[in-house]
Image (cartoon, rainbow, N blue to C red; front, side, top):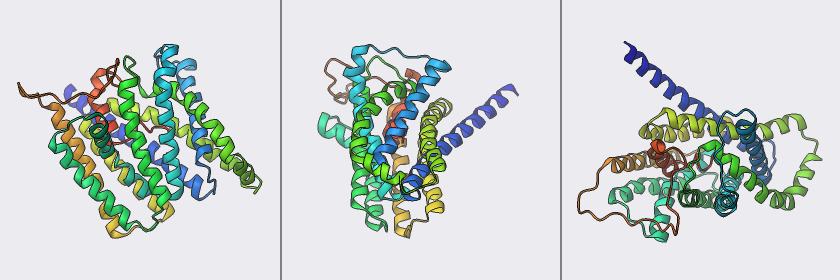
Length: 357
C-alpha cells in the first residue's frame, strides 16, 4: 500500500513538474512575441539585456540572500578563462532567439529550433571528427525533412528571421559542446550557471544594445505608450525567464530521460498551439504536417540516443573518437546521476542552454 502511494506521488510530481515547465516556457515565449508584435517594441537586444539583468539579480537573491541553493565556488581565473567564452556564445544564442521572434511566428521559430540535434551532431562530426551510430544519422532524416517542408510552406516566411533562428541552433549546439569542455570540474546546476553567466552576458550586451537600439527605445518612449503596463510586461518576461531555470531544474529531478524527451517535444506543440490562438498567424496544412514530422523526428532521435546509452560496448569494438579537449575533459553541468537526463536535454531541446529566452 505504501509503495502504491509512493508511486502515485511520483507520477503526480512528474506531471506537475512537466506542466509548470510548460507554463513558464510557453509564457516567456508568448510574452516576448507580444512585446515585439503587439507592443511594437522592436528591440531584441534591449529585451535580451533586460532578461540577463533580471536573471543576474534573481540568481544572486536565491543564492546569496535567500540561500536556497549552495554557491558553487569558481576560481577567479576560471571565470574569465572558462565561463566568459561560454557567456559570449550564450549571449549570441539568446539574442538570435529574440531576433527570430521579432520577424517570424512562434510556430515557425520553435520548429526551426528543433533542428538543434542535427546541428549538434553535424558540428561534432565535421569539426571534431566524432563518429556516430548509423541509427543516429537515420533519426535526423525526419528532423531535416520536417524543417524543409515547414520552411517551404511557411506563409509568414522571413529570410532574416529564418537565418537568425537557424544560426541560433548553431549557437546552441556550440554552447552545448563548449560547456562540456570549458566547465570541467564544475558540476553546475541551472541556478549557478545563471549566477555566473548572466552578469557576463549583461556586460557583453549592454554597450551594443545602447549604441544600436538606445535612440530607438527613446523614440518609442516618446510615442506615449502605456508605460506602466509596458514595463510590467517587459520586466515580467525577464523575471519569468529566470523562474524558468527553477522549472528546468525541478523537471530534470522529477522525470526520466525518455519522459523528458517526449514532454519537451509536446511542449513545442503546446507553444505552437497557444501562439496560434493568440496571434492567429496563418498556418497551412502542409506547414502543420512539417512541424509534426520534425517533432516526431526529435522524439525518435531522443529514443535512439537513450537506447544507445543503455547498450554496453561489445568487447573488441573500437570506441568512438573523443572530441579534442586539450588539457581539459568534458564534464556534465549537473550531478553525475543526472548526466543522462542532461545529455538528453541539451541534445534534444535547447531549453537548458537557452533557459533565459
